[in-house]
Each structure stands twice: as structure tokens, then as C-alpha cells.
Length: 426
Ligand code: HEC
Ligand code: HEC
Ligand code: HEC
Ligand code: HEC
Ligand code: HEC
Ligand code: HEC
Ligand code: HEC
Ligand code: HEC
Ligand code: HEC
Image 1 (cartoon, helix red, strand yellow):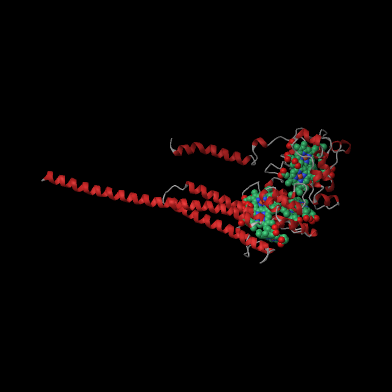
Image 2 (image 1 turned 180 degrees about the vertical axis):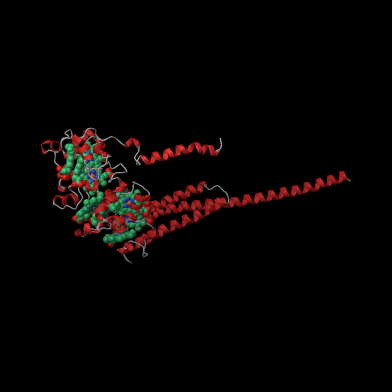
């Protein structure tokens, strides 16, 4: 079969497939389920075109048969509007904003009710919420703070694991940003509105939003889902430390950490920031202009001396590593075996990574202990590389001698043959 006829056979399939993909609205077929049948609330609201604007068929409650009446009350079996939406049938209508937590909490704070559906879902959202700045202010009657539906929507509520959810990790920053980046909306509170913009440019924001790395923190990983409180002085290093375990452990043992606490200085934030955390580099420690240490320490004090020593140790390891790595490239170029050199370099690099974390002990002795290990490995790699390069030279010389010998042999043979030919011819 020719390529052209193959194409002709595939084309109709291709078109059908494309149309099929377009028509499924990008929702996988098996996820699209039916609305509850015979539910008069939905039937009438659909006919009257009075479905709420954020209505979605994918809402978890609808999917579990907890339809309009589950939240708003009323009798979904009655076709008549007055009967269906009668207070006698339990209809509560639209909750006032300040009532939303109880409105949702009717089920979500009821452990027995929730257990029947999804035992894994916690039942503390409402109590948690009231510990947050949002919850406290809502209780005091502030209508601008977030209530349950500000973050979850009211009619398109999905599990946080569903990529379409407003609280899916990758969508959380945009959900918070609606209010927190709105200068006019936030004006009266006198807090900054740059959290989102800074976050997007941060190492965390890039990992989360560009590389889709859900291991990187979204707003709620630092602030809590429902207890959206700015992490306090004592909890802040814990918040960062839930992911950066070693950094926190090293830092916690230092005198500096204790001093920070006394003076109400936030630990990690002081050197790394909070929303604008950036990729780190060795010159952040040391005595240059780029060093964070110089914000608080100056020539003559212990911090200054330690910063200088630590930077020196790191620099020595980097230099030893780079020089060995350059030799490895040479080994590769002459086609010799570089496997063991590679292993040694890996170990050396591992020491460098560990030394950078050990910076958080702010102790030159602990850092140089680790950098010395790395330098040792780099030196071994360097020595091995030199040996390989030398071997390759010897081998090449060997080849040269052999080649010369072979040529000489060939030449001798040539003359010998000619001599024989001449003898026979003559
Ligand atoms: C026969 C039609 C019909 C049925 C059945 C019906 N509704 Fe309605 N609903 C309406 C109309 C029309 C409105 C808007 C006019 C109004 O508020 O009276 C409305 C308004 C509402 C509102 C907004 C009320 C407000 O105060 O703004 C909610 C919430 C609501 N319906 C929920 C329900 C629920 C829950 C059910 C089922 C138990 C239900 N409806 C059944 C027609 C219906
Ligand atoms: C998970 C609970 C929940 C379910 C289920 C639910 N609602 Fe609502 N509904 C709310 C909340 C909370 C509000 C008020 C906040 C808002 O409008 O965002 C609301 C508001 C409304 C409003 C007023 C909208 C407006 O813009 O003023 C209408 C109408 C309504 N719901 C109808 C329905 C209908 C019809 C259904 C079933 C298809 C339904 N609701 C299912 C929680 C729910
Ligand atoms: C009638 C009881 C009821 C009410 C009222 C209710 N919920 Fe639910 N909700 C449930 C049940 C049951 C589930 C579990 C559904 C399932 O099995 O996936 C659920 C699931 C959820 C989930 C998904 C949890 C997950 O991780 O899978 C969220 C988020 C949620 N509800 C938020 C709300 C909010 C916000 C409100 C108020 C606007 C609300 N609910 C009102 C019963 C209710
Ligand atoms: C400031 C935004 C915000 C507010 C306000 C908020 N939530 Fe959430 N909620 C979240 C986020 C973010 C998650 C997802 C957490 C995760 O990634 O697992 C979540 C998760 C949930 C879940 C499912 C996960 C679980 O097991 O806890 C439920 C149920 C829920 N919220 C209900 C509520 C209710 C009820 C309210 C009101 C009392 C509320 N939420 C208020 C942001 C919010
Ligand atoms: C409906 C708008 C709205 C949404 C959505 C919202 N917030 Fe808020 N938030 C507010 C308002 C208003 C305040 C009160 C500001 C104040 O009193 O300083 C606040 C306060 C806060 C505070 C305390 C600030 C302080 O005073 O120190 C934090 C932290 C916070 N929000 C985080 C979040 C996070 C994280 C999200 C998303 C998961 C979020 N918010 C979603 C409106 C919102
Ligand atoms: C890596 C952790 C982390 C992440 C991610 C994070 N925050 Fe923060 N946030 C903090 C810390 C730490 C503070 C400062 C607490 C303090 O100084 O009391 C803070 C403070 C705030 C405040 C109080 C006002 C201010 O700027 O000091 C708001 C509002 C806030 N964050 C919202 C957000 C929003 C919205 C997002 C997502 C776009 C977000 N945060 C992401 C750690 C984080
Ligand atoms: C939910 C886990 C999590 C939390 C909480 C968290 N981080 Fe991170 N952090 C990460 C991940 C993942 C990366 C790597 C991002 C990347 O580059 O891919 C990272 C990267 C970093 C980096 C850059 C490291 C480098 O190689 O240069 C610094 C600095 C940092 N975080 C500091 C903090 C601080 C300070 C806090 C608290 C305010 C914090 N982190 C909270 C997960 C977290
Ligand atoms: C006094 C300043 C200072 C404090 C406080 C501080 N760091 Fe660092 N951090 C640094 C410096 C300097 C570097 C760069 C080290 C290097 O690259 O040589 C760094 C590097 C990092 C890195 C990247 C290297 C690695 O270990 O992977 C992370 C992540 C990090 N810090 C997290 C934290 C966390 C979490 C806290 C709070 C527990 C914290 N830092 C507190 C100064 C500080
Ligand atoms: C936000 C200010 C601040 C920054 C930034 C800072 N320090 Fe400190 N440092 C202090 C304070 C406060 C103390 C305790 C008072 C003192 O002993 O001088 C301290 C103490 C020290 C000590 C003495 C600890 C002891 O056990 O006696 C060393 C060493 C040190 N810092 C190293 C560093 C290094 C290295 C950096 C940069 C990576 C750095 N510091 C960045 C404020 C800071």
C-alpha cells in the first residue's frame, strides 16, 4: 500500500476524531454525569432561565444527588413554585453572607452526616474558618472578607483535587487574587495588594504555575485553607519548615533564631522574603554587597567573620569542583573512561548542596566540615582524570609506534614484491 492511499484511508477517521474532541467540551465523557432526575427545582429553574450564573453540572453536591434543596431547603418533588419553595417545606432561600458558614456547616460540621458520604473529608472547616482574619471579620459584620462561597463558589463546587476546582492548587492564587490584588476593594484595610504579583515572580510561583509542580506552595499552603491567618512569629519557620525540613532544623538551633524571636523578627522571611522568595546563590552569604548578612552585621562582629569564612569554604569547593569537571570534559574528548570520575563528581556536588543547607547553622566549622569532604572528592576526581589523560597519551604513542611499524612493513613488502616481479619478468 502506498503512503498516499494510507493517508486517504486515515483522513475520514482523523476528521471524525477532531470533531469528536471539539464536541466533548474538553470534559472526558465518563466524567459527565446526569443531573438528578425529576428534581422540580432544577426543572423549573432551567425552564425559567433562573439557574444561578455560576451553575455547573459538575458540582460535587449535584453529582451526589444533593441538589438545590440540599442547601436551600424546600421540596424538590413539588411542581408548584409556592409549595416547592415554601418555608413550611424548609425553604431558607439565599443565605445572608454572614450566615454562609452555618449554611454550609449544616452538613459539613455534622460528622455523622459527612461520614455517610465521604469519611475522608474533615468536619472542622467552619470552626477553622472562625479562627481566621476572614472569619473573625465576617462575624463582626464586615461584608468584604471571604466567606465559603468566595473561595469555593456556590454552584460549581468541586473537590480540591479536581483541576477545574477554584481551590485546586494551581487555581488558588487566582482565587485569592480576585480580592487581594484589587486596590480599590482592599483600600480601607491598609494592607499591600502585591502578594499575587510577587508570588507569580517567586521561585515558588514559577514552580507551581509554570512548571505545574504541586509540591511548591500555593497561598493556602502557607496561610492555611480555612485559618487564613498570616503565619505568626513562631509558626512562620514551621510553615516553611514543613517543606524545608533541614533548613528549619539547623536554623532553630542557632542563637540568631532565638534573638530573632525575642525581637519579633520572622525567621526565614528576614533573609528570603515571603511572597517574593527567589532562587538563592552563594554570594547571599559573605561580606559583599549582595550578602544578606551585611543587613545586620558589620566588620568586627562575630557574624561578619562567620559570613566571610562560610563564603570562603563554599568558594573553595566550587573552584575544586569546576576544575575537576573541566578535566572530566577533557577525558571525554579523548574518548577515555569517565564513569568513576562522574561518580566522584556527583558525590562532590552532593556535599556542595548539603553545605548550602548547612549555611543555616551559621557556623563556619560545620560548613567547612562538609565542604572539605566535597573538596576531597573533587581532588580524587581530578587525579583520576589526569591519570586517564596520561594513559590516553601513552596509548596514542603506542598506536603511533605500531602504525609506524606497520607502514614500514608494508613498504618493505612492496619492494620485496616488486623485486620478485622484476625477477620473474626479466
Ligand atoms: C415552578 C418553578 C419553580 C420551582 C419548582 C422552584 N423555583 Fe426557585 N424560583 C423560581 C422563580 C421564578 C424564582 C424567582 C422569583 C422569586 O424569587 O420568587 C425563584 C427563586 C429562587 C431562589 C432565590 C430566592 C431569593 O430570595 O432570591 C432560590 C434560592 C430558589 N428559587 C431555590 C429553589 C429550590 C431549592 C427549589 C426546589 C425546592 C425551587 N427553587 C423550586 C421558580 C421555581
Ligand atoms: C452547596 C450549596 C448550594 C447548592 C447545592 C445550591 N445553592 Fe444556590 N446558593 C448557595 C449560596 C451559598 C448562595 C449565595 C451566594 C451566592 O449567590 O454566590 C446561593 C444563591 C442562589 C441564588 C441567588 C443567586 C443570585 O445571584 O442572587 C439562586 C437563584 C440559587 N442559589 C438557586 C439555586 C438552584 C436553582 C440550585 C440547584 C440547581 C442551587 N441554588 C443549589 C448555595 C447553594
Ligand atoms: C446538604 C449537605 C451539604 C451542604 C449544605 C453543603 N455541602 Fe458540601 N458536601 C456535602 C457532601 C455530602 C459532600 C461530599 C460529596 C462527595 O461524596 O464527593 C460535599 C463536598 C464538598 C466539597 C468537596 C470536598 C472534597 O474534597 O471532595 C466542598 C469543597 C464542599 N462540599 C463545600 C461546600 C460549601 C462551600 C458549602 C456551602 C456553600 C457546602 N459544601 C454545603 C454536603 C453538603
Ligand atoms: C480563603 C478561602 C477559603 C474559604 C473562605 C473557605 N475555604 Fe474551604 N477550602 C479552601 C481551600 C484552598 C481548600 C483546599 C485545600 C486542599 O488543597 O486540600 C478548601 C477545602 C475545603 C473542603 C474539602 C477539604 C477538607 O477536607 O477540608 C471543604 C469541605 C471546604 N473547604 C469547605 C469550606 C466551608 C464550609 C467554608 C466556610 C466555612 C470554607 N470551606 C471556606 C479555601 C477556602
Ligand atoms: C472576597 C474577597 C477575598 C478573598 C477571595 C480572599 N480574601 Fe483574604 N481577606 C479579604 C479581606 C477583605 C481581608 C481583611 C483585610 C484586613 O483586615 O487586613 C482579608 C484578610 C486576609 C488575611 C489577613 C491579612 C492581615 O490583615 O494581616 C490573609 C492572610 C488573607 N486574607 C489571605 C487570603 C488567602 C490566602 C486567600 C485565598 C485562599 C484569600 N485571602 C481570599 C478578602 C478576601
Ligand atoms: C511561602 C509562604 C507564603 C505563600 C506561598 C504566600 N504567603 Fe502570604 N504571607 C506569608 C508570610 C510569611 C506573611 C507575613 C506574615 C507577617 O509578616 O506577619 C504573609 C502575609 C500575607 C498577607 C498580609 C499582608 C501582607 O502582605 O503582609 C496577605 C494578605 C497574604 N499574605 C496573602 C497571600 C496570597 C493572596 C498569597 C498567594 C498569591 C500568599 N499570601 C502566598 C507567607 C506566604
Ligand atoms: C509546600 C512546600 C513549601 C513551603 C511551605 C515552602 N516552600 Fe520553599 N520551596 C518549595 C519547593 C518545592 C521549592 C523548589 C522550587 C523549584 O525551584 O522548583 C522551593 C524553593 C525555595 C527556595 C529556593 C531554593 C533554591 O534552590 O535556591 C527558597 C529560598 C525557599 N523555597 C524558601 C522558602 C521560605 C522562606 C518559605 C516560607 C516563607 C518556604 N520556602 C515555604 C516548597 C515549599
Ligand atoms: C540569616 C539569613 C537566612 C535565614 C534566617 C534563612 N536563610 Fe535560607 N539561605 C540563606 C543563604 C545565605 C542561602 C544561600 C546559601 C548558598 O547558596 O550558598 C540560603 C539558602 C536557602 C535555600 C536553598 C539552599 C538549600 O538549602 O536547598 C533554602 C531552601 C532556604 N535557604 C530556606 C530557608 C528556610 C526555610 C529558612 C527558615 C527556617 C531560612 N532559609 C532561613 C540565608 C538565610
Ligand atoms: C535580620 C538581622 C540579621 C541577619 C540578616 C543576619 N544576622 Fe546574624 N545575628 C543577628 C542577631 C540579632 C544576632 C544575635 C546577637 C549577636 O550575637 O550579635 C546574630 C548573631 C549571629 C552570630 C553569632 C551566633 C552565636 O552563636 O553567637 C553569627 C555567627 C551570625 N549571626 C551569622 C550570620 C550570618 C552568616 C548571616 C548571613 C547568612 C547573618 N548572621 C545574618 C542578626 C542577623
